[in-house]
Image (tube, rainbow, N blue to C red; front, top):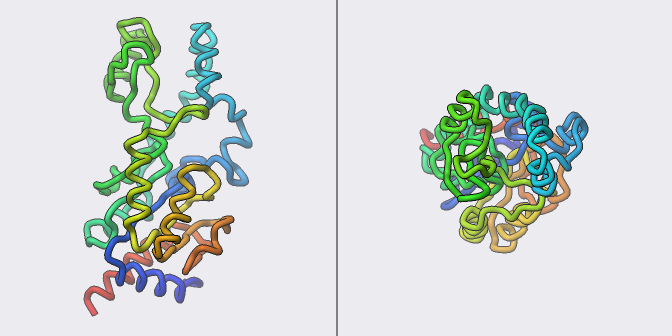
Length: 258
């Protein structure tokens, strides 16, 4: 592989670390068929980002007909999330956790693909589509319960007649406090941060890389495109995650058996 030397260096850094964590972004899931947001063919090139704002959703709630059309527009994206499968990079990161090399995954993704690949300690800082909460009474719903309600003709209305909102962070909403606190705690404790598929332009979570670096952690960046924070990294690899991360895992396996 073209990046063989960098892969070996990254594997060596991870092997010698005591508390390595992963930060994953939208680029992590593009190889699973989920469109990223800011790339050349990103979602925001196709639809207006306002559709993902809490203000726009609340505006739609005043008109049930508009809301149904709005949710109909989002339905294909939700279906894509449901159909997506973990790719080789997700599987490799889960393997690194099982090997004890990765302690946790901080993810900006809402697709739950890390968990489906086998990762156990996953911090979802932007929420998940797998659960939902009534905006009125606060009742919690699983994704399966929502599917049953829609099938029964109840759409996404709670019994209290308020809208059931997926637990995804919309623009204009605060990040979940517990997840954000855990992410910052991990960034201060880690001695290595493996950044995969993140453009590192969405704050506050992009700052965990700065925090980790200031605390003395090594930084390994793997992304298809360069980022504005590459200068912080000890190793930068611009290539397909589905090739690079499994190669790093394979090299670590070989070092373990050396």
